[in-house]
Length: 238
Image (cartoon, rainbow, N blue to C red; front, side, top):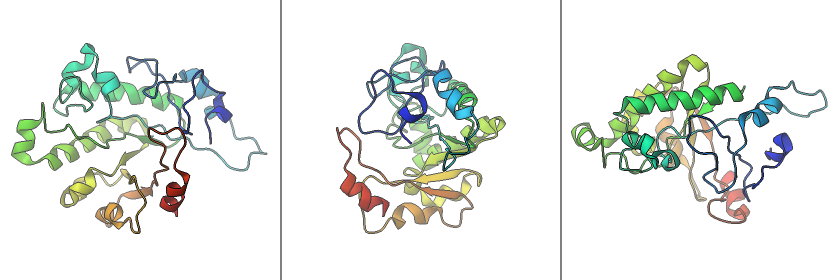
């Protein structure tokens, strides 16, 4: 569902995207990372909390995704949050900082009030800076995989009072398959890959038999382009 069908168009909609961004007080910015403007919570809350009209063919479930590990440069670039960055003003939260958990809780507490659905997505993909800064010594001691995978249960525990199912991107976990069984069974893996391949078992097999639910999330090829790559996306989805 395109966001303008629910909320009306923002002042600068992002091209080639059916997603949208929501401004929350826990994040120190009002402009989206894509260069457009984020919706304010009241604009989003009203249509999502209304009852489904009898004439609507399907019910909508909007899953909010707020990065809780990587892709956080738009927060960590500020001095206010610089102590929470794995590397100075970088993109990854430092798991060893208690303030990281406070920030995560504040962000998702706000999102849970806006989105009534049963899911919250914590991102956690592409945490490439992990082990290069504040957690370097820890990563050298126990391994980068354990540093990464130990962070996810802590996040899940903090968000448990919200009574939501927690989803995370599975790309980093697949690099450490021997440790995946240590993750909480109530997590949901959102397994994804950029390109089109003959087989996707590389990104699915590590989660088999873990007890976790798996969402298969084909990439639609709309990153850093004006128009999505629909041909590759169609192959990816099939």
